[in-house]
Amino acid sequence: MDTVLDHSSVRDEVRKLCERFPGEYWRTQDRQGRYPSEFVAALTEAGYLAALIPEEYGGAGLPLSAGAAILEEIQHGGCNGAACHAQMYIMGTLLRHGSNEQKQRYLPHIASGKLRLQAFGVTEPSSGTDTSSIKTFAERRGDGYTVNGQKIWTSRAEHSDLMLLLSRTTPRDKVAKKSDGLSVFILDMREAKGNGLTIRPIRTMMNHSTTEVFFDDVFVPATNLIGEEGKGFRYILSGMNAERILIGAECIGDAKWFIEKSSDYARERIVFGRPIGRNQGIQFPIAKAYAQMRAAELMIARAAALYEAGVECGAEANMGKMLAADASWAAAEACVQTHGGFGFAEEYDIERKFRETRLYQVAPISTNLILAYLAEHVLRLPRSY
Image (cartoon, rainbow, N blue to C red; front, side, top):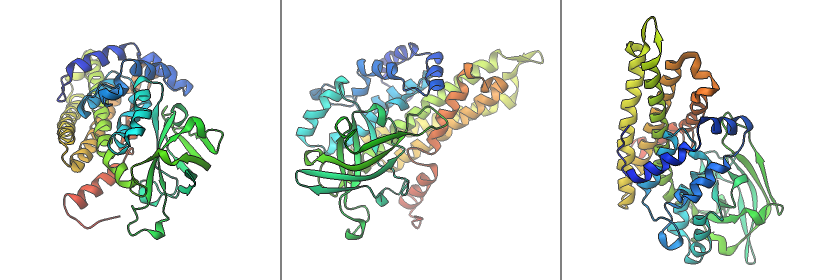
């Protein structure tokens, strides 16, 4: 199945790598609730998790569209990039707003795989997607900050060395805008574990390695503050368009996997003396999901092109993510329906991928919030929240 985003040579190599990790590998990880360490190590060794890091720091220096192509192919190959995709979209905050010293200190080690930057500490139990309402507080003390609070849905925290942490540094009632007074830190979790940092895993319907994290007087050196104190919200926002584009690309890869599975099975499965693929009741949902996927693919490509050109792409990135998530879910539904009872059998991998792709109707931003964003910022309707 061809694609809009090019980078064909990169795609070919990612496809070969994914062939080393067939369905049985992922079923085993799923059954055991295990982090796919071997898969992540292989991606790291091949340089794919350092794709967006500039060459001067040991990365490949590739554009965002290449990162999108890598993640799309991972999903298209039946694997799961959620085990490590955050490293790509977290990277933008450090690259755009980090100091030269911070980049020199961390990026070469992240590129080599010596360090993992996989944890993104933003969401809290009481705030959800209302990021400006977070309560985790970093108080300046001497040559650093003391952090107290809690984060939730912090995926991969148990398998990451570093966390990109958003914390309030000025109380909300003392700032002019609710989004002011937030700061971003690089937290070295290797030092923080056992020194006030507690990580508790959360079991979910898919093997996503997500956690809740507690901070009890966790010390962060002032040198680990990214950019200026109090301006962290805009630093986080600047990386969210990249996040939307990359997650959208993953959904497109999922949709392609489901569509190919459905089409192959519909051609081969004989019922009442004929392939079930001759029936329009089977054909139409697959064909519609294919059309949805192609439309989403174009929007993701458009958003990536705007991002790489340094042009505002908030609407395109959000629409691309929403359309891609809708397409992957439609393709998943069609795939289960096409396979009937076999769609629920573990050995076909459909039920696993079905659970995994459902996440992207909710994360990293829900479809409803995207619609609210478009209503306010594109259609100029009254703000709803």
